[in-house]
Structure formats: C-alpha cells, structure tokens
Amino acid sequence: MNISCGTDIIEISRIKETIEEMQDKFINKIYTQHEIEYCESKNQVKYQHYAVRFAAKEALFKALSQLLENKYSISWQNAEIRNDKNGRPYVKFIDVQLDQIKNIDISLSHCKEYAVANVVILTH
Image (cartoon, rainbow, N blue to C red):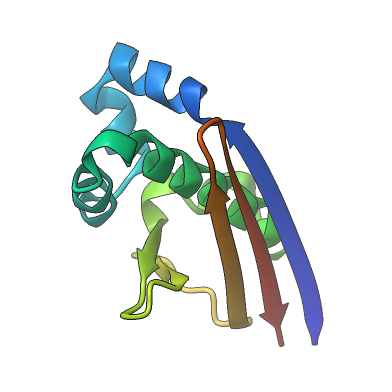
C-alpha cells in the first residue's frame, strides 16, 4: 500500500476576480454542474466555496500525479467535490477509472481571504 498527499492554498480574491472576468468560460471549465449549483446557493460567500473546490482539485491532482500516465489523463471535470449528509467533503470521479485507489481523505477550509485543501490517497 502507498500513501500520497497533496495540499493547495489559494487567495479567494483570485478566484473571484477570474470568475468576474471570464464568467462562464472559467466556471464551466473548472466546475461540474453540481459544484456550480452548490457554490451559487451560498450567495454572499459563494467565492469561498468556488475557491476551496478549486484548491481541492489542485490538491487532488498533486496527490494523483504519481498514479497518472500523464497530467492530461484527468481533467477538472473528472473530479467533483461533494459533501455527504453530514457536510464532510468527498471526491466523486466522473468518466475516469482509478482502480488502484483504495481510499481518499479530503479536508477543506476557508476564511475571508484564503481557501485551503488537503488530500490523502491510499492506493493498493
């Protein structure tokens, strides 16, 4: 068994500025429809939720890097960040099969200025 991890931190203002500048072009490239609906439902703090999901995907890609043949074998749209009924985040893979993954643990946090994510992957 192997363990790999990835961490990412981002300024929320960078995501907000990018969304305001590029609008749907950026949002639809990075986020799934489910993620967009979730973030948009957060009204005043939606940019915190967009930013933390961006950080989560970056952290996930860092942790996955040793498992991938090349960095283009997974895209932003292949990893969806969801929350279970208790609010705990998890990753749902879409249109990609990563059989070697036994478990993924993901932790997200954000405040007024920053969003951070940590991902730990256990593989066979």
